[in-house]
Image 1 (cartoon, rainbow, N blue to C red):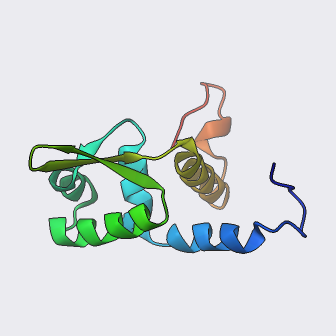
Image 2 (image 1 turned 180 degrees about the horizontal axis):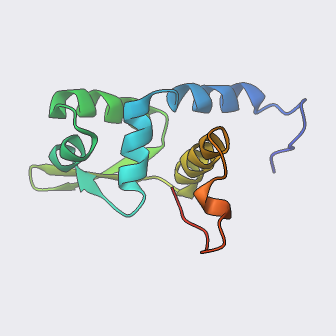
Length: 114
């Protein structure tokens, strides 16, 4: 089990995870995939980038094991490998909300997920 201390052997790997998510397009891809799998073209439409650009970002996310693929004939569908990348991005967006005032996830009308 990971020791959550400053001496943890996983600190350097955690930094690599943050570096992978230090790109707006990759954050948008993670947010788009949180509800299920999508094709490159569908992701490209959602994040307003070319399919080629999205494919390059997906390749990096695959290498970091944040996303996985499923093939259906010639089509490839991408999904999150587990809930951790989704949660990291949601937490980061919610932290960002704190920088501009009272965040929506603290309002009385119930929590909202970024």
